[in-house]
Image 1: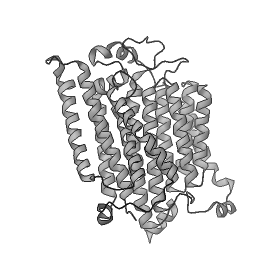
Image 2: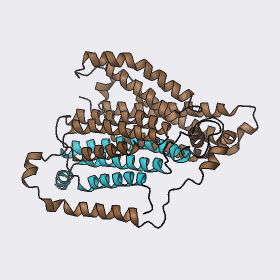
Image 3: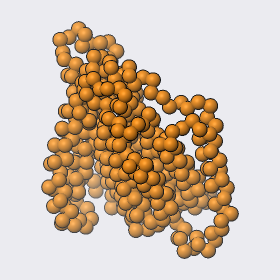
Image 4: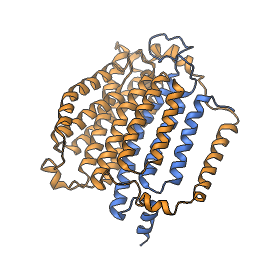
Length: 310
Length: 115
């Protein structure tokens, strides 16, 4: 079963690489993310599957928004049209990259002295996590407990990404501040469906965040689900009324609070002095990380919307 | 042979997207290839130590024989979130380049920026 899905996964990637129209490529990307999410679930990783499902929504939305505004979705990926490329296609051009790639693949598969992949720490983590960090979901316990340093730097990476997106995207202040709806044609049935689904999404995001320490889920996945609620809100009302500068400020403050909490609880060990249950730390951190991811994705999405808005 | 069969799928996928990256004329294809490459890396880390009938690592005292390794999962969740930020930055740079050069291909953009 898993081999069938992995084969489908590779076929999906080949389709994406060979495709020449943008709109079809984006649809294949969505299917590809669905297949990889199913594979993650089969590998016994429901947390990663939820994260992939929630986040691939955003990569698809970013592709659609960005390409639709600037060169349209129905055009080809390349400037060279397939018809004119047909005329000067010769097989000799394809031989060197294919040979080079196959050479690297064989080298990687057969000539590595020792496989670096192992699971030495698995038993250690699985037997100790509920005593050391608390909670019942060992994945959440690891990224908020043993590996909190990684999580802090990951949050910093997201912040750096957002800062670079806001720096690189200029937008027209006047047309954005009036909050005028744009003249995009929206189908009524799509708007109605989104109107029905949207509160469920918000509820699902809050559920994922609050139950992140005892069931699959957590701050990252729940934050992405809540941010997709805001995407739906934009699609229903089509109004740009989010105060971006204030949200950026809120996100920076949340990041500082996350770092302070992690330092207080993990590096200093506050819960050994205070009579707090350990799940308080996990829930608070999940809430803060969820708020941070929500803010970050909202900022990126609205900057894409506002980028040189017509 | 030092890899399991299930790990070879993701290694193969990595090199397929590597092929897409080195042969793509279009900048959009390069961005998408980087996305696929990252997906391959995530799949490789999750497929380490796969046995059939594997269980998610959730519960107070799971049996360690049939339970998946939680450490790569915790690291890959953060990698997925970083991936979407990477895609966003790539797209913004792509559009800035397109507004300057009016070209979607590497060759055409290079030619325009030389002038």
